[in-house]
Image (tube, rainbow, N blue to C red):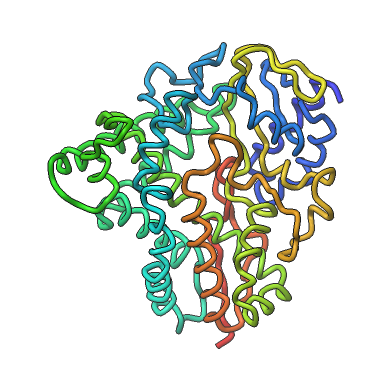
Amino acid sequence: MTATETSDILPRILDYASRADPYPLYAELRKTPVAPQADGSYVISTYRELAGILHNPHLSSDTRNLSRPMPGAEERAAPAFLNLDPPEHDRLRRLAMRHFGPPHTPGLVTGMEGDLTATVSGLIDDFSDKERIDIVDDFAYPFPVTVICHLLGVPREDEPRFHVWVDAVIGSINYDPETDPKEKLDNGLRATKDLRQYLGGLLEQRHGRPGGDLLTRLANDDGPDGRMTDEEIVSTANLLLIAGHETTVNLITNGMLTMLRNPDVLHRLRAEPDLVVPLVEELLRYEPPVHIIPWRAAYSDIPVGGTVIPKGSQIMLMLASGSRDPQRFDRPDHFDPDRQDNQHLGFGSGIHLCFGGPLARLETQIALRELVRRLDGPRLLADPPPYRPSPILRGPIHLHVEQSG
């Protein structure tokens, strides 16, 4: 397939018209595992090549290493560790992980199971007697937002403020200067600044004060790697606030949609609650919340799948395509919670493996288990449902369900 032909596929994937089902286009794209684009960038879509490059030390997550700067690069604040390379990435991730999981806080996530179940139960109580429910607005959004606000120490009542900022930030991630209005980028940059100022104000209140939330712990921690600067803490909190609820909203909603489309699986989960663990893993492969990593850079010339990607080139990683690659997974377009060999790319791979993956897994397991247990004969009112604009963080913006009771 020529560069011109592959360049035609990517815009179709990014087009909102393909949001409900991009998978046939991914299959077309996989015919050229490393697809050069007309603008000099490269798109990688097959499992083997994706898994390899995610572990390649010549792949940079720092967009400042691109030969062509990102739009608005000069206005962007210091990146979070997700968009940094070693050794800066490793230091900041260790500092954050001290308060988020093993080895220093090994019971943090598992110890939340009771509170997570109580939150889920309360939300379901509020709509259990309704005939019609929006799984997104009534459940999948408020649940992880409540959780991440509690963890970070962000007031839950401020959600209407940061909701607007987060939507603008997400909307600007896939900004294309050739097709998108400049306003889209400007709104995202302004929202990023406003959100960081808001988090900075919360951080100022935490210095020198005791507390169990993550902002307070980071503000007062003197571990073996030293202490994060205020700017680093704000970058980390900004990342966790956005990623800590946006991806989980999509994962829960995609999961409920998938089960309503596969009623045999729904009925089986109701009878076998423990099935939810492998079911969520299959969901991360089959309908993941993150489809694309849009910005990576080549530190040096990188050979991938018979193609040499030149130093400084932008690389786009099509994770959801890799997880449906028939060269890696048997019957990849079939949802199979009994799948045994399931090393999906739903949370990425390598040093940037999703920081909040354990929490997202547990939240989704509890959410789907309880929804299936307590909803009375749910059925979809619209299929496909309306989707969010983003092709990167992909999920329905609404999922209207009717109960029979």
